[in-house]
Length: 315
Image (cartoon, rainbow, N blue to C red; front, side, top):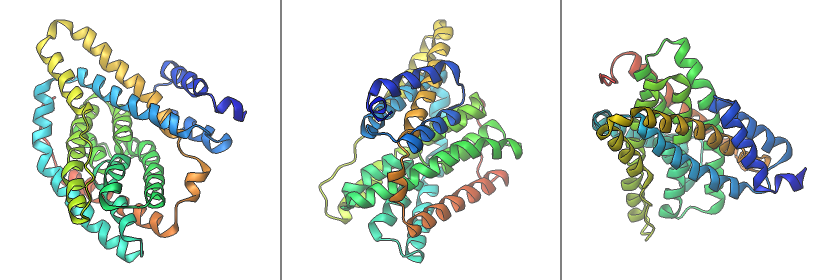
């Protein structure tokens, strides 16, 4: 079995089959995680590279399902919201790191991953603050685990609470770590939720740049955060959709393809959860990350349900 798992084609074939026969990104993620936890994933770096590229492609294709005016309206309306959310999350994260006696750099990585965009924020902040490979690996493993849980449970919570498409889109974009899981959860919930969540999440992700630069300056590092250029592709796709309405049917097909690719993406993301990665997670780091995530999720949900956070945007 190990020889089969070492072949990239094995993972590619299953990913393709899931895009055809499975609609739920959550199920795809669970299948990937199950295979990896039971039999292992000897080419974790390879599948991780595939998932990163597919995520970027799927986000770009999802842009064809949106009007540029909607994207800009949601993005501009959520700039202040994401700034406040990130600032408060980082502040609470620092306090929890001190309470649970988590190493300073690890605490910053976990706080950044929760506040901005999961693994991408951790990858950008790690060299900026001079974090060790072990600290980065632990933060990645913790955030990955919570990402999977968020993708699975958030749609059920939203449905049970009767959340609107817009409100669920905002909530998932603010409370779930990685872009892949945000898009996956929102796609399960509905088309309008997907439109709002994708845009708010990408607006939130842009804050990785100033935060990483600040971290580098404070630690006197020359490291620079990489600009997420696929965001430009997302905006370009929405622009094309807006100015070439005669091909709306074709653009809808492109957006649907993006959703299908997201299923394959989540399968490959799930394949990165190995027993080795789970063993890296310490009790203090796990308690800190879970507590911070629960606080962010509950407070943002309360603020949305009470009307303190709301984007009144016709979609």
